Length: 435
Image (cartoon, rainbow, N blue to C red; front, side, top):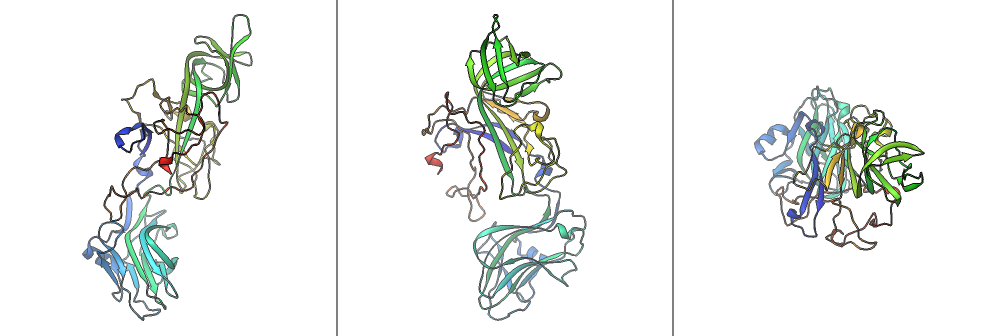
């Protein structure tokens, strides 16, 4: 689920957070229908049936785990250099019907000196093994590994094993929550939010396209301009279309001169384009986009569908400023179509907009507009922000005494033509409470 939230004040009481809008992700976008192999190590008898530990040097331990109470732990011993004694191998499972399976597991380890640890795979029931990953050094925290097994899709007798070749140092390796699956989870998901803050006007009877950068104006009876402004970004169309002569929506403005009048025509380059219906003062126009590290289908020109390019970690890909400019070379995200706006809120403070390539995808609100001067960040000021919600855990159970164990990576901000006067707050400020 993607949720747009508003923080109402500086307290940590969750009652002072208000949801503005939400979208439930389709089930097949985050969980797949097939689990090919799985073990959470909580049922010792079941785990013993799913694994072969050869010489018996791996045990189920109840003193350390990622989730629940138990995990596999190699039983350190002396000698056995280069032998099969320290191998933990799964039983056979089939990937015959798989197309892009993955292996996921959690582990921590101390594998040092000439001792080597590795993850291996077999496609002939354990007669021959291929290396997938090598592990050496110290990893003291429970860490999740995700291994792409797409190269082994279609195989019927697949096994995985965790292998230790004992050298001059005694190793310690714990394994938990092993799963071979397909389609589960958004792979390193990216949530991107676009917020455009500006004064705006609403219009109807739009018959000639108004575009970002245009100068829109009104004329008085004498023919001289009485109000003008620069169009900040392409208008948000809520109903109708320019080609149909019935476009209706909002125009975001900057560099406003004079006073626009409702009920009068809006012109661009001497041509009547629309009729002004209301003055909206400052508003936020919010769009959310979601992507992940995996490619989905064939990318194209539709920003609303779930077919898109892979959005890898380590770099930043931005959505096009105009959704109509989406094409197969920049289609990294799906534009979120909001399922519902909070009906308990004042309808004059928030509404859902958008048609065509932005159908139901734009939230217009004046609830999170700021007026603080530069250098000031009062805790009671309404803001949009990135936050975690939930409790941390060190033993698999929620613990309100711990911070959420959620991590953010590759944080980036893009600023477009920042307005720095006329009551607009600086684009980026840091709250001392959020450091």
